[in-house]
Length: 146
Image (cartoon, rainbow, N blue to C red):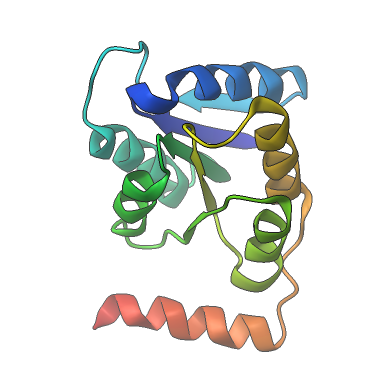
């Protein structure tokens, strides 16, 4: 799978860990930055990662900041993105099953490496159920036109 990653300084270490973890699993990772722990502006990197997903260059994306909130808000401003901020394994699984999320946001300041690995695995390996959830996702996406 081709994956985009984007983060700010508050989640740089976790992004680097996940980049290595995903590469070892055979995924292609497009690192949209940041590339150091120096202070930076999260919207730039979340936007870049989201654009890779909607352009089709990447299948899914993962964005990170200290809380995960800022990057999830930013990613969701890009038309076609369904980015979910997840803090546990169940929400990472359900956002794929029920919401067909194409991006995952993680909180680097609150999420350990092992927990992040499990959430990413669930996000990447869970299929969308469709059915009644498909109808709801369509309604969500119609909201972009308002």
